Amino acid sequence: MKDLTNGSIVRHILAMAPPIMVGMVTIMVCQLVDLYFVSGLGDAAVAGVAAAGNAGFLVNALMQVLGVGTVALIAHAVGRKDRQDANLIFNQAIALSVLFGLLTLAMGAALSRLYMRSIAADEATIEAGTIYLLWFMPALALQFATQVMASALRATGIVRPAMLVQALAVVINIALAPVLIAGCGTGYALGVAGAGLASSIAVAIGVLMLLAYFRKVERYVAFDAAQWRPQPRHLKRILNVGLPAGGEFAMMFILMAVVYYVLRDFGAAAQAGFGIGQRVLGLIQMPALAVALAAGPIAGQNVGAANGARVRETFVKAALITTVVMIGFMILAQLKPELLLAGFSNDRETMEIAFLFLRIISLNMVAQGLIFTCSSMFQGLGNTKPALLSSATRVFTYSLPAIWLSTRPGFRMEHVWYLSIAATTLQAALSLWLLRREFMKRLVSPRPEQPMEQAGAEPVAPPARVPA
Image 1 (cartoon, helix red, strand yellow):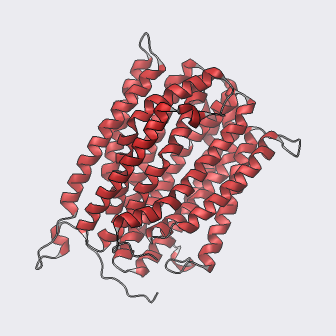
Image 2 (cartoon, helix red, strand yellow; image 1 turned 120 degrees about the vertical axis):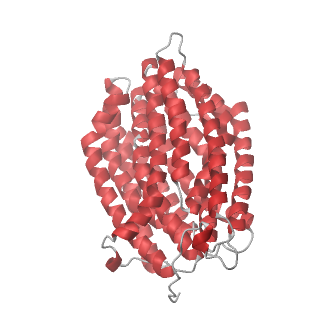
Image 3 (spheres, helix red, strand yellow; image 1 turned 135 degrees about the vertical axis):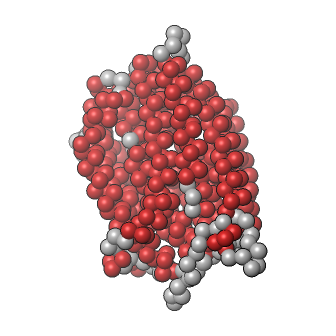
C-alpha cells in the first residue's frame, strides 16, 4: 500500500501515470493489431470489427460500475486507515464481477446479431461483426475480474503489477493474432473469429496471472471467500458510486452508435475510416487519460483523510499536465496525421476519411482532457452523478442534431465532426462548473467544535484497527 496523503502530488501523478498509460496503451494496441490483420480481409471485415468493438462500450459501462466504485471506496478506506472496510469492499466487488461476467456472456450470445443489424452498412459487415463479437465475448466477460483487481491495487497506490500483466497479455494477443486471423504458420485462417479468439485467450491468461499475484504477493487487500456472500448495504455503496460512472460510459456507446448510424449511407469505407480514426484518437489520448486516472486515487485517499486543500491541488496539477499533453498530440495530429494512421488500410477512400476525421476531431483534445480530469476527480470525491450529467448533456447536444443533419440536403460527414467539437467543448465547461460546485459543497473545512458530518462531508465510520 502506498500513502498518497503525503508528499508531492505531481510526483505521485508522474509515478502512477506511466504504468497506467502502458496498461491502457497495450489494450488499445491489441485492438489496433486486430484491425491491422483484419484489414487484409477487406473493408467489410474492418467495418464489422470496428463497429462490433463499439459494443465494448456497453460492457465497459458495467466494468466502470465495479472499477470506479472499488477505487473510490477503497481509496477512502485507505485514507482513513480502515483496512477492514477496504477488504470487505474488494471481496464484494469480486462477487459482483462474477455476476456481471455471466450476464455479459448471456447478452452477447442473444443480442450480437441484432446489434450489428441496427448499425452496419451491409450484410457482409453484419456477418463479420457478429462473428467477431461471439468470439470476443469471453474476453469481455473475464475482464470484470481483471478490472476489480486492478482497481483495488490502484486505490492503494499500486499500479505496476496490473500494467505488467496487461502488457504481457497484449504480447500474447499480438503473437496469436496473425496465427489465428491469417493462418500464419498453420495455414488455417479463422478470419475475424481468430481476432476475437486471440483476445479471449490473452485475457484469460492475464486473469490467471493477477490471481496468482494476489494470492502470493498482495497483502493490504486479499481474497476472503467468507466475504463473497452479497451484503446489500455494501453492494449499495459500490453501486451508488459506480452506477453513474457506468452510465457515463453508456453515453459514450450512444455517441458512437449515432456516428455509425449517420455514416451508414456513406458505405462501409466511411465506417471503416471512422473506426480506424477513432481507435488512433483513443490511443493518442491515453497519456492524458492516464494522468487523470492517477489523480483519482490521490484525491480519494485525501478525501478519506479529510484534507480538502490537497484534493483541490490534485485537480489543478492534473488539469495542467493533461492540457500540456493534449496540446502536444493535437499539434501532431494536425501536422502529421499520416504518422499516426499509416498501415491500417490499403483502401484510399478509407484512409482519406480517417485523415479528415483525425484532423478535425483532434481540435477538441484539450477539452477532452479537462473532461477526463473532472471525471476522475468526481470519482475520487465519491460522487459520480455530476459526471453522468455532463455526459448526458453531450449526448443530447450531439446526437439529436447529428441525426437531424443527416436528413438534410447537402449533408457531409465532416458536419458530424464539427458538431462533436462544439458538444465536447460544452461538456468540458459544464464539467468544470459542476466540479467547482462539488468542491464548495464537500471540501468545506469544519470549525473545531463542529462535527465533520455537519460541515457537509459524508459521515465516516471510525477506522477498524487491523494489523498490516
